[in-house]
Image 1 (tube, helix red, strand yellow):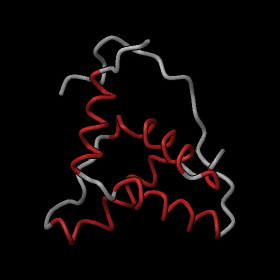
Image 2 (cartoon, helix red, strand yellow):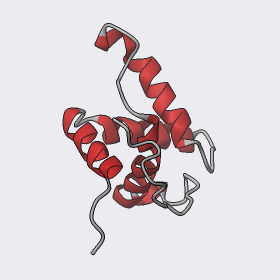
Image 3 (cartoon, one colour):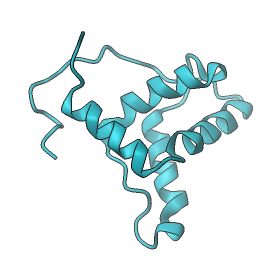
Length: 102
């Protein structure tokens, strides 16, 4: 069995700190899909969510790490069958400590 990476553990912590995160991302993705988008960038959804939450957080918006986008895309398509194939996925490979300095 593969041990969770530091980045995966950080993603799990991010979800605990932001329990509405996947729900909000799913709502955005479903809305875009309803407008006819067959695919969309999960990175773009992270940026939209940061923009939309800037007033409620009182600063620059929701604090979510760009390194978590691949985890979010996979979980969204797993939890919301209607979003299957909406995000393009690549093979995840460990790259030493790159992106896992925090």
